[in-house]
Amino acid sequence: MVNIATLQPFEKRQKTMTDFVYQEEDFDDKVRTQVEFYFSDSNLQTDKFLWNVYQANDGWVDLKTILTFTRMKQYRPETKVIEALKNSDKLVLSANEEMIKRKDPLPDLDELKSRRKKNTVHIEGFPKDLTQEQIEEFFDTKIVSQLPQEKTVCSIRRMKNRVSREFFGVADVEFKTLEDAEFFLNKLDVAYPAGIVDTSEESFDKKSLLKKMSLLTFQEMRESRKRFGVNEVTKRRNSFNSNNNRGGKKFKKGGKPRSDSIKEDKETKEQELTEESKPETTETNAETVPKTTEAKEPESITTEASA
Image (cartoon, rainbow, N blue to C red; front, side, top):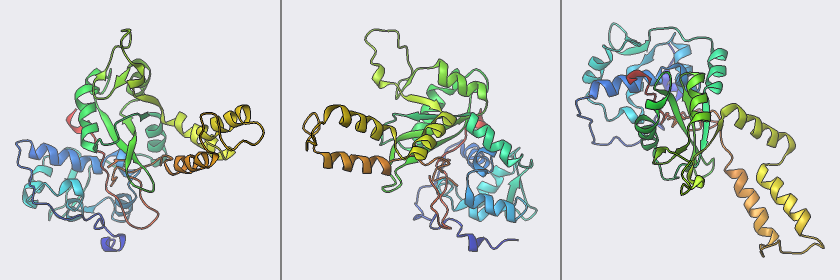
């Protein structure tokens, strides 16, 4: 068995344990849904910490490690968590009830990654002060009931600024089927917090719509920008400069100094998205795992189990 301590299990995942204990009637369902997400096809392929433990221990993970994850700290005592997990149809506990693993073997990893990218929609335009839970609730209450097939999403991953670590209104949402992803992408007009909206009314402001594209399209655009060393904002700005700033003038049209333009370019680069982002993600679920051995826990949580 691997020495989990050498993988730095999550404390720097560890935040101060709060006194809050979840005591609602759906305690068991909440526990199963959250832990089943950690072991899901969607999460394991992007959670570096949990994946390393999963591989090293033949799929087994110490339950105490799972209980240190931020979103699990509210579920206490441990004995009650164990009782809830005994009724999971996707997970199995060891004989001594100290370890847990998924019942079914993980499918081919390359196949999973390919499917995830095809089934994921990249969405921009959420308010920057939204929490992971608020975005999940938005999809649960306003979107999934209208999907043609599975009525569920596998994961929601918020994207954060690499420097400030603040959410900047962008999320990648993985649907269970390609058909549901394409339906959401091409057939639904969506705004926050309204949900699905009718844009045929003359009074409707289309600027309020969330901007959507497939994750594959977004990745192609991003790689193109990297390849040519320029992003779309810079290209538009350079084109504007060449057409409107002759004679080496200090100011661009509108009176903005060139130094401000350089500063904006720098800020734009700092806010590039991180694909494969991990929700504090063991969230997801989508935050970005740093290039250290420190692991981040997913914010994202699948609704698949409750669908």
